[in-house]
Length: 178
Image (cartoon, rainbow, N blue to C red; front, side, top):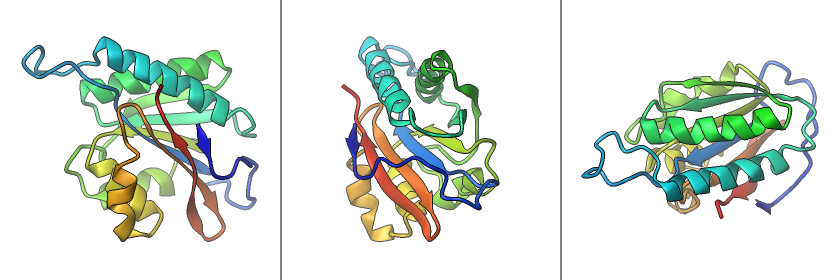
């Protein structure tokens, strides 16, 4: 976990908006030739479990203990989300995990924006795919030119933590598997 800022307190006055958004790419899947549904490989499961532990540590000081995990519905993203949900549940978090629209590889960033404007919990974890996650992160940060740089953070089962401040979303930490 590479932290830019670590304060996880409530910025105040934003109870009906997500306070933290963690964007993850799915873990490494098996090759399509092996299984066209592309579930997580053993390596991918290990990556997701490692990231899950880091997410639990990152959120340890968060006041709100409720998290919504959304995933694209593709098996590799669903399995990554389920491993993160299990780790958060074991750490005492109230967890909801379900498929959502807007997280597929070629989706426009704007399709996923409603997930954060009408959140189901103060902490949102979204598991998706490249190239979408880099574009989505750049859109949240209101910096379209950063899409390439941000796309580079999304190694398997890795991503970025964003924190909502009064003036919008800010990068708070990189979440790296391993």
